[in-house]
Amino acid sequence: MPASRLRVIGAIILAYMLFAILLNSVGTVILQSIASLGQTKSSAAILEAFKDLPIAITSFLVASFLPRFGLRNSMALACGSVCLACIAMPLLPSFAMTKLLFAVTGAGFALIKVSAYSMVGLVARDKADHASLISTIEGLFMVGVLSGYWLFSAVIDSSNPASLGWLKVYWLLAALSAVVALVVMTTSLDESAARPDAAPSSDFTAMFTLIVRPLVMVFLLSAFLYVLVEQAIGTWLPTFNNEVLHMPQAMSVMAASLFAGATAAGRLGAGFVLRRVAWFRLIAVCIAAMALLVILTLPLTRGLAPNPQMSWASAPLAAFILPMVGLFLAPIYPIINSRVLSALPNSAHATMTGLIVVFSALGGTTGSYITGQTFAALGGQTAFYFSLIPMALLLAAITMFKRLSTT
Image (cartoon, rainbow, N blue to C red):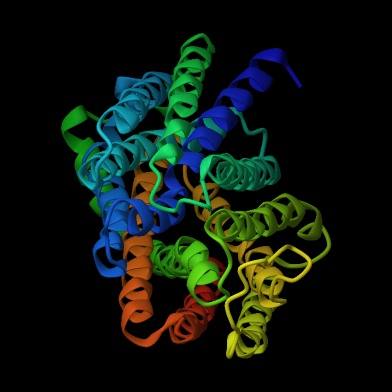
């Protein structure tokens, strides 16, 4: 692999993993906002919207313009912005500051993802290489999520849940953001192939030209439903562990990291499985396995009593089984993303990725909000049972996507 290509891939991975930590800390921050910032479940649930709506808005407004501004420039701007927001978190500890942090993070991630997917299109050798790179990058994104759970659990004081000591983690995240920005800016890449030939005035309308295609519409519905399921479970798993399984605060966060670890393993392993199994068959089996895990595991969470001396050896079995949903959820997103992107020219990748990010963000906000409200009104078990509905809809949408992609 040429050194320049390796450097570009490395820069993408570092930026992606940084934002994986920041974005997916929302579940932990919701838990800590309830414990140390005086929030209720219903009020804390709004953090997902402060993360996802800026992702959607930024992607919709600027995705098609990023190749002209510069893909590396966009990445560096995103990293620099979150660096400043992370510095502000421990200096101005409040729920309002957490909203601002996630708004900045969301807008920055829109720049990161559009740039990253466009850069993959520039360095990929062929469709197979494109699919492999997307799966690897998305897999390492989940490794970033996993490391984020570890970072936050290390600074949470379970003996004093109201403590604000957990905010110390943002000094480290600010330093990491500055380092990644430097790496991105010192990486060379010929971006000319990503720049559209049409006049700048047509950049924005290109998004609408894409979205009216039946294949793209069905794909975007699939992406929406996928992220709805992922965020419904991933965001609320720390709170589920704490309130339903009665695990201590730090232990709840660490147990939730199993979901990220399972998702990372699923994405990194998907590339090998796809060499032997057709992509649609793999996805169908994965969705069926996810639903089966939810149906079999949630009955194990009923009637559990608090145990102040709980250890990993005495933790409920459901704490280890339910996160394995991530293993089967994992391959779906990179597979469908790669299939739709590799069918388009490089000049359309930024616009298509913008649409992916918009609908993914809307799905994430919808899933987290519905789960949060259901959790507060009907309890954690019922909230997680409801995830079976979008799972069934996801299978239907991907079935239609397959039919359209082969016609």
